[in-house]
Image (tube, rainbow, N blue to C red; front, side):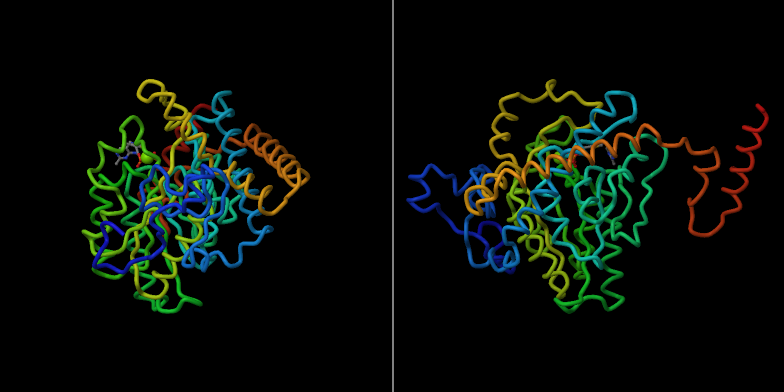
Amino acid sequence: MPGVSGISQPGFHEPEPTPEQVIAGLRATVEGGEDLVQALTPEGERLHRPKLDAYLEDIDAAALQGLYRDMVLVRRVDREANALQRQGQLGIWVPLLGQEAAQVGAGRALRPTDMAFPSYREHGVAWCRGIDPTELLGIFRGTDHGSWDPAETGFHLYTIVIGNQVLNATGYAMGQKFDGKVGSAEDGQATICFFGDGATSQGDVHEGFVWSAVWDAPVVFFCQNNQWAISEPLERQTRVPLYQRARGYGFPGIRVDGNDVLATLAVTRWALEECRTGNGPVLIEAFTYRMDAHTTSDDPSRYRLADELELWKLKDPIERVRVNLVREHEVGQDFFDSVAAESDELAARFRAYCVAMPQPGPERMFSEVYAEPSPVVDAQRDDFLAYHASFE
Ligand SMILES: Cc1ncc(C[n+]2csc(CCOP(=O)(O)OP(=O)(O)O)c2C)c(N)n1
Ligand SMILES: [Mg+2]
């Protein structure tokens, strides 16, 4: 594998498509380069490799249907939230459209005892951590910073400051190590940290990589390379494929097809296992595409060509699973209809919750600032409440 010689070789790769695959018109290698790990082609063809399959042994038709359902429901919530922003119910929304497989593949690889640190786009990972989508709404309606409990869910609050969560995750993973939670594939713990291609240009990410490398911290750095950092293209961030950067820090890096839920699941399971057993950290570059705007405040038609999006539509993460379920597992239309009906119900509940959300009182922004009571914050709160009361 190019770029990581001298560091343990993940060994997921097969160099060339077979002549049969070429004749059948199947792309066994894709635009991400020959080093891209893939289990499901954009055409829905399942690729088999011993190492990959070893991490997918439990994925039968029912499990694949489960992953399909995850992605459809998460996409439906995403589209509903986008519409809610347009209707003035949310201040902003950060779409995940196109990144469902990267997030569900990584999210479903986690165990309850693992810890995940998201940026602000990881609605699919939140879903996999059991967080109801309605709990995401406060952040984007401007009423709270997220209403879930990070310790209970194993999912940290969203981080808007680009790359900052890499330091938080590194520290958390070092803690897991110092607490003796690393060492066993059965009950070892690991941390996963999500960030984007643009974040890799931040100092925090570099510092986190250095610290985690020299402390063997059990952290999987999961970079969703969606090709854009708002209007900045990937070529403004790097001269080498991002996964190859890991070598400079002294840990393995691997590039997976982030539109392929099975490959992402397998590679993330492998990386977490490396971390659990003391071989962390690992960098995963999930090669994907941001199919919508950066946020609802952004207009990508100002800086990218529409035909780029058209090309990526052919690599849709959900469609390839649907095709595979029909062709290789003979899943019937009833299943797809029932998922569609479930997604409509979820969207309706999500919308109803959003429009009825209570406005928090003026004291809310002062609560839970620190774990311990703070006289300074308490005094500020009392002043602010007195000011509000002066209008009565
Ligand atoms: C430290 C910091 N600098 C700048 C910003 C403004 N900003 C918000 S998102 C973003 C681009 C991030 O791109 P990327 O890391 O690729 O993640 P993506 O949004 O594509 O998921 C920037 C520059 C910020 N939030 N924090
Ligand atoms: Mg990006």
